[in-house]
Image (cartoon, rainbow over all chains, first blue to last red; front, side, top):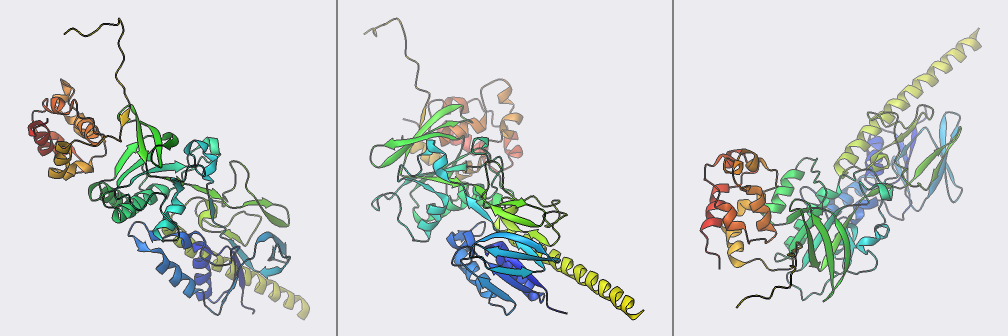
Length: 361
Length: 110
């Protein structure tokens, strides 16, 4: 019997880990990536919460692992559609190339929220206002600080929940990782500028993961980072290349203002694609307001729908998740795919047996 | 000299200005009792406080005011504490409340 093939769409942490797991189980994998390099959002990170693990080390080791004889990586391939044909799935890229496989895993991940939509924060207008992604690039020394090098004690603010838990943006969900990412980035910033003053503006602090709450306490006690409960109403330009921020300190029951050298917006996760399900094919389209994340049949499996057997989803395309959760989900999905392929093989063998019996008579 | 009376008054500015530098004595309190940084304003200390039944004593609010540099009422409010120490048993984050209160009431403010 022929070796089964699985097509994986998206070579971020979910796609890479699913591919590695399947390859180890003697299954052939075609891994498709829209960008010219695998890695997804992980390639932008400097260090990872909660243990400050070096992101480049993890990325390198993961990409090394996909150099496996069972894995074929296709970069710069934008997948537009998957089609059902004779119990198999054919995926087609925008260059009209087609690849057939026995199962498909969608690991298309997320897009970061477009911070210009929250006009009151002035992203894209004031150079001091940056996103969490841009701050990570500054840690990576890929770009410069938004304030002068002469400033020894910069004042920085972090705004949590930008584009998350916000019905006006159509994003009702919590993006989960921004709380702890802000804590991690604040600590990293304090390490680089020990005299800096850092305030985090939050609605709730959701330290759900292992070691997150401990990191939060560390930020308070060891790095004296201040947490202010209340959202920013606006940012405006102030004297001396600063931005003035206004917020309500809901614990103090009073308004608050401060001039900052850097304002970091913790941008949330938004869906990257929307699945448009037709009878014999699924189209990948741009998500509209309030829609996008893939909802599997139930929360305990990765199969996306009862009438599309063999199509699975893993990672943040199903909704916001931390890197640890994504890696575990990808590995679990790989096992689900293996079970599915086994069942299909048994079905085929049964049919063949029946056919042979009929022929023998 | 009698101040001029215009027949109206202007209310005090309520905005917390974080641009203002914190007084040295306040910084000293945080240095001598760094466990203050652990406070997350959960209110357990105030819920259990005996003095709080009769006065404005709420330790977490003292802590918050200190964090925001609002010092005008700090020493006065801290004086209501009877140092019974129940709050310290209740605090989930291990703030050394009694020591902090002692520091606030005893440190010389200019």
